[in-house]
Image (cartoon, rainbow, N blue to C red; front, side):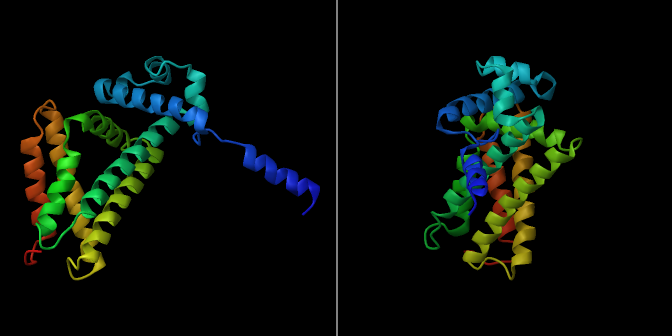
Length: 219
């Protein structure tokens, strides 16, 4: 390798692009994301700006731009974070699956119990605001589609692992219906003022279980 090429590789290794934090910047980045979630969840997109996020996150607007590049970059990071949370919630519940101890119904209940927690209301409210923006912004819409696709894939993989349904295409269709139904109940919870989530959680469990087991004997 030439000295010039070696120097180029060294430059690439030492460069940390915006949105890819080093250890020192991780706390600052998380503080910005938390502030952005709070603003979206309480004030909606109408009250959302980089200046407002910087004030709430106790940093400069330049720091927000360093980590996320643009307003859209920050919104996309929030969507990605939300999708990761939803997927981790599902996969944690699926990892506890026991065919002799509650089966698919208990796995669904575990996932919904973890999702419909009062402390998740702000994150869910922020994601709802972003889903509305996805109807007007193609980059936001693309990130939302990617997030939903990752959730559907996790559900379908789980169904395949326990032989739920005749084929993967069927499982994917069921997974899409389960995600749609679940977030319909999330929307009802948020629109009701975000009080006791229990009625909405139970409705989501019934819907998801019915979709998962339609035409299939108990598992």
